[in-house]
Each structure stands twice: as C-alpha cells, then as structure tokens.
Image 1 (cartoon, rainbow, N blue to C red):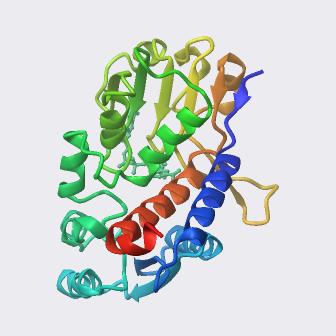
Image 2 (cartoon, helix red, strand yellow):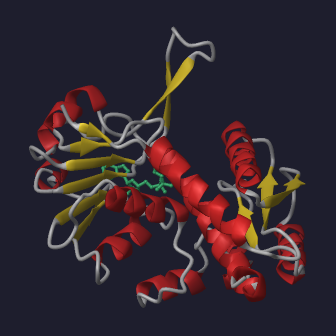
Length: 295
Ligand code: NAD
C-alpha cells in the first residue's frame, strides 16, 4: 500500500514551529493578518473561519473585513489601500473567488508586495520567476513543495507533471519545482493538452489541480509515483448530513494501490495551504518588526 501523506499532521508541525518562534519574539505587538471577504460564498466563509482559527492558535491576530456582494472595484481598492497604509497590519488576504464584476487581478496587484502573503501580485510572481528568496510564494504551491520535501520525496532530476495552469496553483508550482535546488523537470498540462494520460504516466511526481473528480485514473499513473491531489470537489453523497462529500481530482481508490505516496482529500493539500499562509504572515511580520524578530 502507498504511504498516505498526511497534510494535517505536517501542517500541525508547521503551526507548532511558528508558535514556538513567535513565543521567542519580544514584539510590541503580535503579527496581524487582515482578511477581506466579499459576499457570503459558503466555501469562502468556511476557509476564512478556518484561517482565522489557526492564526489565533499560533498567536497571530486577525481582522475580518466583510464587504457586500455589490461592492465596487473602487470601494474594494479603498479598503486595500487603507490596510496597505496601516502599520499594524502585516499581511492582507483577499479571499477568492471574488464576484464576477470585480477584477481579481487588479485587487491582487493593489496589495503592497510586502503584505501580499498570497503571493498573487505581479511583483511577487516576478520575484519567484527570478528565484529571489524574498518572494512571497502562493500558499498552495508552497504547501505542496513543503509536503513533498517533508515526506522525503526526491525532486532533483525527477519528472514532475502538473495538470492545471492557474496563477493560484499550476504556474507558480511549475516555477517552484523547476527552480535551482529543487531541480525537477516540469511539464504543465491543461485543458487543451493532447495525450494527457500518456504524459502523466511518465511522471515521478504527478500533481492534479483541475477541479474535476476522477480526472486522474489508474492508467495515467506510473508505478511507485508520488501523487498530489489539489482538487476540492463537492459531490452528492446520501450518507452524509450535508448531502455531499469532498473529493479531489484523483480517483483515489483506483490510483492509490499504484502509488509510492499519495495525498488524501480532505486532509492533504488543504491544511498545507493554511500553514503556508501562517508562515508567510510570520515572515511579513519579521520584515516589518525586525527588532522584535531578532530578540
Ligand atoms: P482553475 O479553474 O483556475 O484551473 C483549472 C485548470 O485545469 C486550468 O488550467 C485548466 O486548463 C485545467 N483543466 C481543466 N480541465 C482539464 C482537463 N480535462 N484536462 C487537463 N486540464 C484541465 O482552478 P484552480 O484555482 O487552479 O483550482 C484547481 C482545483 O484545486 C480546484 O478544485 C480548487 O478548488 C482546488 N484548489 C485547492 C486548494 C487547496 O488548498 N487544497 C487551493 C487552490 C485550489
């Protein structure tokens, strides 16, 4: 049977490391992350709650700015500008997706790069491209690399195939896995890729970030590969209270027996994303309060 990479366990280790680090700081104030949430999308409500709860456990303050679904781009940017100028705010997170009438790209780029703990601004994506270690790296790709490293998966010279080319997952992950020191040979696939199964079957590390259940089937997976499932999909399920359950993009039952290591959904990449947000927030605080951090 494959090794199940336990994202909850690794995330808890990271939380404990961050908490211990913060306890040593003698700062005049705690780190602070500001969440901006627009509307009442149930998934966004639950993600922001979870992030705020973990922040509190670690010793990070959080603020929630709730904006109505009808908010204009200008009003949203005014809030971002206010938070950019607030010396007590280290980190700003705009919970995606935003309603269709708003430009996510403009909002992400409006966040001051040293507070952009999501790493979606062109400034931080550019720094990542330049392999500059001061870049805030998007939390999901950073979490995937961290769990790969902490699980002892070899990356150097190995073939990594990423399914999905989004700014949130696929693109920054391709940069991370191919950078010096990680040294994987990376292929990015997407909705127009031909022979997807054949390309995937050559991967030592296969990462699925599509948003469609059972995109990865057993015939697409090389024997002994490490499979990372980023997808979060709600599928109907009569035996749960909610009437649905969460599954990833990988047909776990069929694929797992072929893998060396595999992540579950839930409990795989999701908790790592939150852990990396906390890590980036602490790093932003260290930049803003260097005298506290060095105590
Ligand atoms: P997206 O919709 O922006 O991108 C999906 C990508 O999949 C696109 O690049 C598209 O070209 C590709 N694609 C679509 N159909 C395909 C097909 N048939 N074959 C090959 N490629 C195909 O989505 P995203 O924001 O990157 O998220 C992807 C999934 O990951 C979603 O389920 C999302 O909920 C999940 N996600 C999870 C976390 C986490 O923390 N676990 C974080 C971010 C996203």
